[in-house]
Image (cartoon, rainbow, N blue to C red; front, side):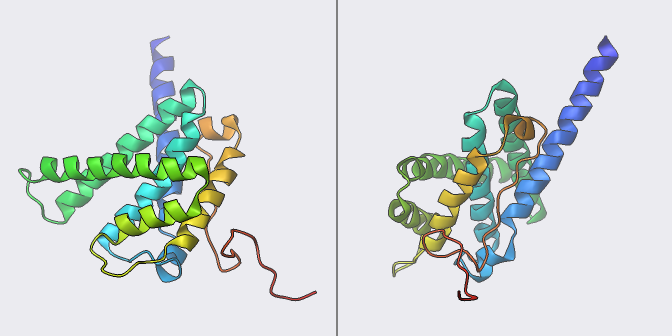
Length: 192
């Protein structure tokens, strides 16, 4: 009986690691940085990873207990990864908790702000929130509409993923690409 518990814990760890790797890969798709206006910087990558985690977190909030537990473990892995990254950047042990508190506050603030716009499927409000967060010091308006459109479409696609796939750590977030138009439609430039 007790050996079964160790096996389940090991299996859960593998699911969390697989799902977290899939989500981080989704956040690193070059198209976000080359075409959708996200700066290819440490903070730009934090912003994209936050966006992907928020989309996944929102999807699993509608899941059963196992999906919600998986989501919590993945968010925990996200913050452990952030802690490790901060230390790699040379921040000393004294400064890490302060920075982690700030990053956690930023993440949960974004979760709340993006949730309002996503719930309303309001791409303009979402684009404005993204611009404020990704470019906090910009003097001119930064257009993040294409990223907002992608987020709305990605959330729609995530909603179609089965509970079984969620519980196995098989949720995949569709990558954006040049075929995605401004309203999220797939363009066919080949003509009739």
